[in-house]
Amino acid sequence: MKKLLFIAILLFVSVVGLFALDGIVTWTWYENDPDVEFYRYQVDGEEDGRWIVVDRNVNEVSLTLDVSVLHTLYLQQSYDGVIWSPSSATDSEIYTEAEEPESEEIPEETAEPEVPAEQPAADEEVAAATVIEDEIDVPTVEVEEYKPLVYLDLGIGYMDSIPDSANPKTIGFNASYFRTFFKAGIFDIGVKGNVGIYTSKHLFYKPSQTQLQAYLNAQAIATTAVGNCDVWGAIGPDMGFTFINGNSVKAGMAIEIGLRYHRYKNFSIGFAVSDHYYLVPTTGMANRLELRAFLSRAF
Image 1 (cartoon, rainbow, N blue to C red):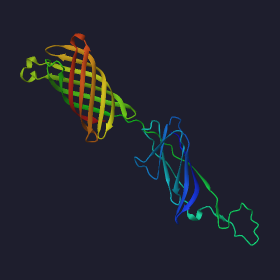
Image 2 (tube, rainbow, N blue to C red):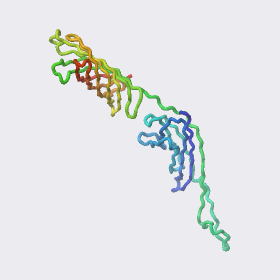
Image 3 (tube, rainbow, N blue to C red):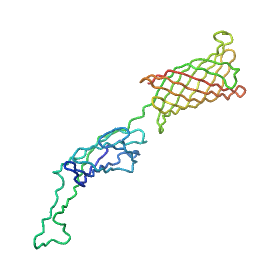
Image 4 (cartoon, rainbow, N blue to C red):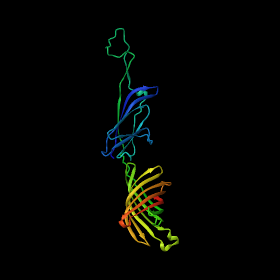
């Protein structure tokens, strides 16, 4: 983004108390990037939850403040209302009671006054408003680039054919690659690739009847942060394979929901439920439900 230009305007209104000098301070800024859609500002701080957000049609703010002390306006801008630029800041001028615009006192009436009727009474004060302009060039600020979420998941799982309980119940290993590319509202959007291989319980006591099942899929994902967790949903094409004691290849769709709990900076644990629904060939349609637990490494 280009430079933001601030104009701070101070209008004296009144003197309150012995030390505080109140005035209306107006800060004005100018558009420096036609793609900016939102601004947010805060006076004397940059605390979360205290920003005031306005749209691109607003380019000034006026506040009644004690102008005997310094005040700083912090201003940020955003393309989407989610990711904000670093703050630009400008300070107000400091004015003491002695610097208040001088009052003009009308002398008391004499025995033969010649004061026009519209003149104020002798004990009234007339205060002139003072306007002070302060023009500041603020350093160039850039909106942060999107930082993708990248994870490698390794885990174990259980897979069963439903509702056909005659098919073997299997356990096995799985791996996933997870990456996002951009943000849409509260969701990060990206892709996910999964691969898994499972074996039936016959492996342990009837090896000759063992059957291996595997799958490979690619999914589109939408994920959002909830506290210390990421929750996502995913859908995409899926290929299923059967080896040993029956060879077959199936094609269909996989739907998945999952949760990743961030316990450490680069490592987390997660759980996922996936439904593999195979439609081709039509003579071998199958539905396999998979439950997974995994460890996740962030990059």
